[in-house]
Image (cartoon, rainbow, N blue to C red; front, side, top):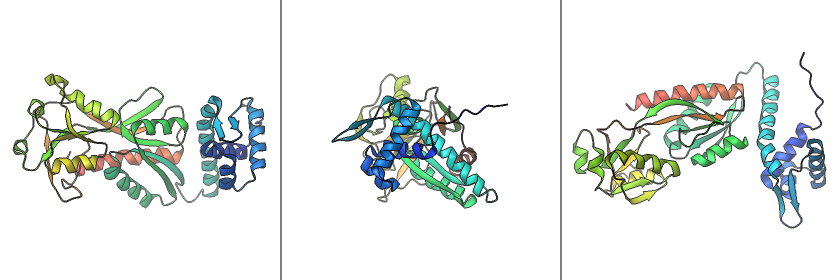
Length: 311
C-alpha cells in the first residue's frame, strides 16, 4: 500500500509563491491576491522553512528576485496548482464533460493561419474549456514549457532537446514565393541555383533563417538577404510588391497580402528537407486529461487544414 508522507506546505502557500514570483514585489502580489503584505510575507517564510531553501532574495528598495532554488521550484509549483485546479474542476463538474484552462503557446510565424481555427473548432465542441494563449519565438515557447507557464506549444521541430517531447503532426516541405510577374513564376518548379542571383527577402527568425539558409548548401552558396523581417506577413508583402523572393513552409489558402498585392507559390525541383509541425510539451510532466484531448484534436485539425489547402 502506498504511504503518503505528511506535507508541510499548503496550496495557498504555493499560490502566494507563484504570484509573488511573477510579480517580484510583495506590494504587487498583495494587490493581485487581495491579501495583506504581512500575510504573504509570513506564508512565504513558512514555505521556505518547510522546503529548507530560500526562494527569494529580498531587496529593501528594489523588490524581490528569485534564487536559483526559487526558479527551479517555480515550474513545479505551477504544475501542481494546475493539477489541483483540474481536480477541483473535475470533482465539481463530473457530468459536464471536458473543462479547465489550457495554457497554449504557438510559434508566432504560424499563429495567424493555425491558432484561431483550432481554438474556434475545439471550443465549439468543448464549451467548458478556456485558453490562455501565448505567441512567441521558439526560445520563448521552450522556456514556457520548462517553467510550467505553458501546457503545450504548436511549433516546428527546431532546437529541441531531450527534455521536450515532440509529436510530429505533418511534414511541411519548403516552397518559394515570388512576385506574380517574376520570370520564375512562369515555371512549374524552381531550382535552388536559379535563385542565387535574385534578391532574397529573408524571414528573420532565429532558427528559421538558419534552416532556410542550409537548403542552399547543396548548391555551394548561401543567398545574402536584400531585405529581412521577423513578420511573415511583411515578408509576403515585400515579395508581392516585387522586392524579391522568399521561402516559407506553412501552406496558405490565399496568395493575397493585406495591401491587396499578390504573390505566386512554386515548389522546388529538389527534394529538400522539410520541417515537421507538431505539438511540444515538457516530457517530465504528465498532461492533464483536457490537455491530452486537445493535443489529439490539434493533430487532426492541422492535418485537415493541410489537406484543404492542397499541400
